[in-house]
Length: 159
Image (tube, rainbow, N blue to C red; front, side, top):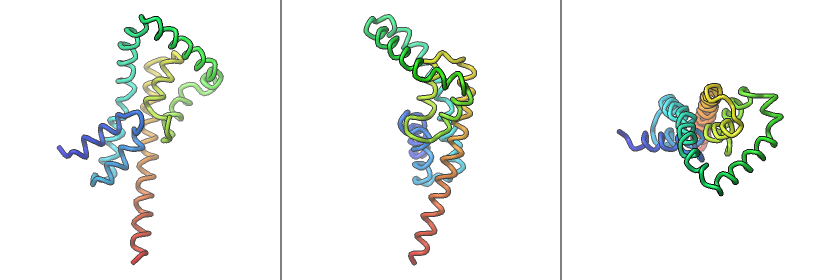
C-alpha cells in the first residue's frame, strides 16, 4: 500500500487536519481527486463513532477523579449556557452545517464533542455529523479542483 494512502487516512482522522488536510495532501501526492475525496471522507465519517466510543469509556473512568469531575461539570455548564439557544433553534441541522464548514475548529471531532457535551441523541448526532462530513468532503474537493485548475492555468500562461 502506498504511504500516501496511509498518511491521507491518518490526516482524515486527526482533529486538526480532517478533510481540510487529507484531500489536498492526497492530491498533491499523486492520488486522483475522486479516490482522494472518497478515502478522506470515508475515514473522516468514522470519527463520530470513534469519538463516542472514547467518550463513553475514558470519560467514565476519568469522571471518578474529583479534579476531572469538577472541571468537566463547570465546562459543560458554561458550554450549555453559551449555546443552548442556538441548539434549541437549529438542532441537528445546525450540527450538520457546523461540521460541513471546512474551517479550523469545525469538523467531525468538534461536532461530536459538542453534541456529546450538550446531551444530544447519539444516533441523530452521528447522522448529522456524517452528513456534515459528506458536505465538507464535497466542498473541499471542489476547492481543491478549482485551485488545481487555477494553478495549472497560471502555470500555462507563464509560458
